[in-house]
Image (tube, rainbow, N blue to C red; front, top):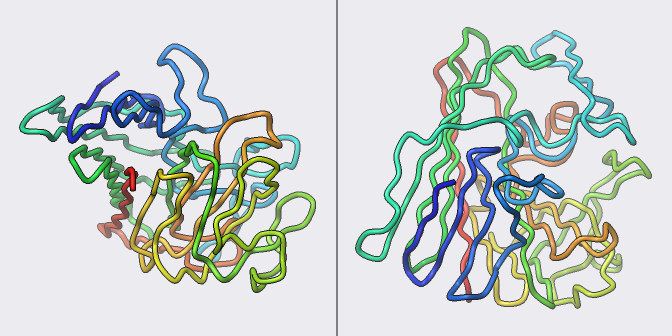
Length: 280
């Protein structure tokens, strides 16, 4: 498992899911962590692609053809968090520490997945320096047909307060299928002012971002809201887990069906998204 040291931070990256399995500033954990030989709890630190969140009922149509994905959330019957969150990635470049920075690049080729017949070459680069840990995900369509695509991360940030400058929230039904986008004001999900993590019940996608960042305590995750205009926020306490999952996303849940902010990768086309986790 590659370890990176730089800028006062230490990170550990797993080849399973290209996942961030540990991030510390000094001797303080910024995210929930897990050992390389253990299970990955609640998708902690994984990369979500070629879609983040859910494809409802594990079915969608694209370019005039119907597709049926494997159900990976049996309780609700959905396809959850893409196809590579537990896949084996390979390290193609690694600099553990040098001049107060470090990086690692991992690669995975996605081919022949049930319900997703679109080959993609994926790369994830983690760079650590005094600005924090920056993750860059690149996808290239190496097939002959257009491909639907979306991505995002799944870190569980640690802290006592959560704040997200988003004016809109995506409301869902009891199975977490999107219902409508509503003003966050006046709902229990308005996080524009810092809220206590303890007792918080939220598992929703937000948009209408005034800026591309969210904060849990003094742990900040930042991104370009033009590339990642959505962010899923999930409180761990109702699940019996620690922290708050903050997941910047290129598209909302079930974008394979709604088409909202869905990326279409043409043959040979590339898409890049990045985000940074740091201490304010």
